Every structure is written in C-alpha cells, then in structure tokens.
Length: 181
Image 1 (cartoon, rainbow, N blue to C red):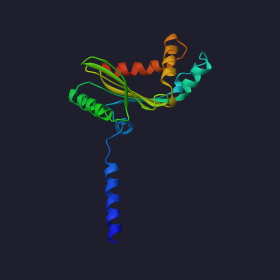
Image 2 (image 1 turned 90 degrees about the vertical axis):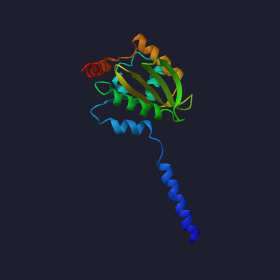
Image 3 (image 1 turned 180 degrees about the vertical axis):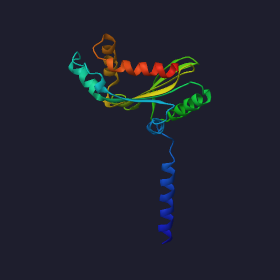
Image 4 (image 1 turned 135 degrees about the vertical axis):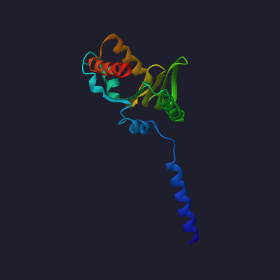
C-alpha cells in the first residue's frame, strides 16, 4: 500500500512538472489573437489563386505550405508593452525546438528566421522581427515536410510574378493603416 502511495505521488509530481513547460509559439498566438492591440491574420495558401503559371515541382512546394499565421503588435503609444512582447517572443524562440536559420538587421530593427522539424522536412518556418518605430511581429509558415531549397525556388517565382499575390495587397494595406494611426 505504501508503494502505491509513493508511486502515485511520483506520477502526480511528474505530471505537474510536465505541465509547467515554457509557453510555445502556438500558445502565444492563441492567447493574443483575440486581443485588439494585436493584428492577427491566418492566410491560407489559396490566397495565391493564380498558380497555373507554376510547374509541377513548384505546385508541390506550394501545396506543402498549409497556411501562414501572422501576429503583430504596432508600437503606437506603449513602448513598455512593445518591449514586453518583444521579450516574450525572444524567450519563446530560445527553446531548442526552434532552430535558427538566419538573422539580419541592426539594433533598432531586427529579423530572425527559425524552423522546426528536420532540415530536409520542415514543419514550420518562423519569421520574428521588430522595428522600434513600427512594432513587433511573428509569422508562422505552417506546412508538412517543406523543403527549404524548394521554398527558396518558389520565392524566386514570386519575384518573377508566377504567383498571384493580389489577395495579399489588402493585408499589407491594413498593416500600413494600423501602424500609421
């Protein structure tokens, strides 16, 4: 009977400790997407409607991307809130499951690109950035077995105009309006 009590206590402690994990990027997104201070967008890949200019490999790559989640906090009046959210995101991205791919920027403006999954089969690409005059934001490109090299080739297609990004122009306009207010 004493063994059962000790085993139960150990399992209860283990369950409590495992639930006290650091917050994930998904949890951060869910917690803040309904907050009016944030701009939250879920962009399905169907927004790139004119994909008939793509070859078979490019279509496969586009189909490996399921959706894009964007969460941004404009600076507006509260510099303290901006700093707090910037620190929260930086802390979350220090978790070892987020692997740094690239960094660029300066002290006032910075962007970092992370990924989760294997190098040959990425499940998520995270773009985190901040600008002291505009705000802080994170974009999550969610997919299944995304190939980084093929994604780069697809981005080149975007530059050549093979993808229709008309649907995204309204989104970028919304960010400008929010930030300028």
